[in-house]
Image 1 (cartoon, rainbow, N blue to C red):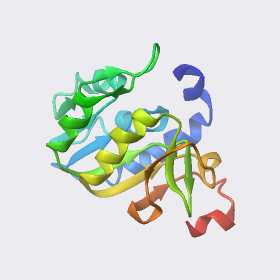
Image 2: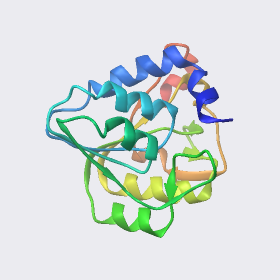
Image 3: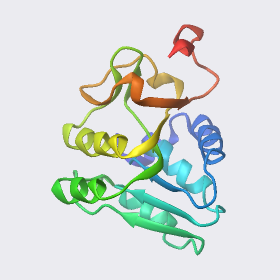
Length: 178
């Protein structure tokens, strides 16, 4: 579905998730944001942070934060995945991430599963996100409860690589053991 339509799904939950995620960011940290509707909300919730360096492979997140005087924003570069997509992929994006290190990466997902880990639909995006996960102290998954227990086609990282999952309160108690 198109980004504006996906943004409307679970909009209140995504905003609450984003506020909780932003509360985990300390002034002066370097953080990465994956493309996605929930991470776009995280970016919006970080607008008043001081001295943070944000790295993203999402064109829209870069544009949203470009007017923030107190944040440094780095776009990975790369090719736009498909028409209407804000996600940059390919060798340029991959190699730029290899030269960076993050305190935290906030990562959206199509699925988060206790056995299969964090997954997304697109293989080229999974490659970029997996590299982000390898270059950070903490992987923080941000996803509404509908994504938990789901498995998509392409693995980003193992369950053991996910430090924290921020979700909403409609979570099935059995999945809370993730």
